[in-house]
Amino acid sequence: MNDPSAGKRAYDPQQLEPMLIARQHAGDVDGMVALFEADAVIDCGGGRFLRGHEAIRDYYAEIVTSGRKFAVGEQRPALICGDLALTSTRLPDGDVTSEVARRQADGSWLWVIDRYSVAWD
Image 1 (cartoon, rainbow, N blue to C red):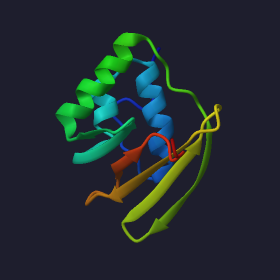
Image 2 (cartoon, rainbow, N blue to C red):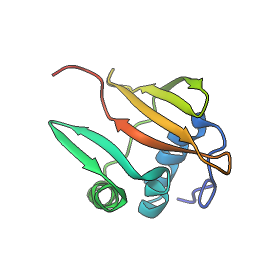
Image 3 (cartoon, rainbow, N blue to C red):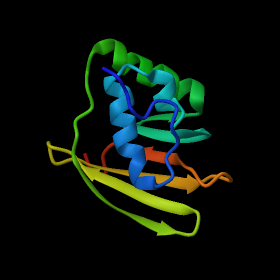
Image 4 (tube, rainbow, N blue to C red):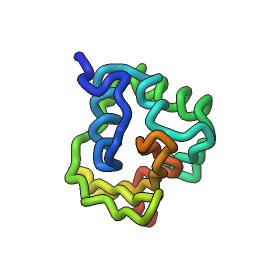
């Protein structure tokens, strides 16, 4: 599958989620990692936390290799305050993701925190 977002930057925090899904469906692990700041943190659930590009790359490589595809959900409007944005998506199974993005010096946005599901176990 071709990824029309390959090599592109998100200049609106709302672009991050669709870019992540497109890149994941295309098998573009490096493109997925490029949507995060170098020291970003991902809460994968089950008490598993990842920090930094290397750990994030390994995690996404596992997912891509497994053949699992991210579901497309209902993205909520981003809440923006200065250089920070809160993004979230309700997934088809009812889970809700939450992410914090930061505006970069070039005006693009990258995620710094990603929580796969805000549901309490």
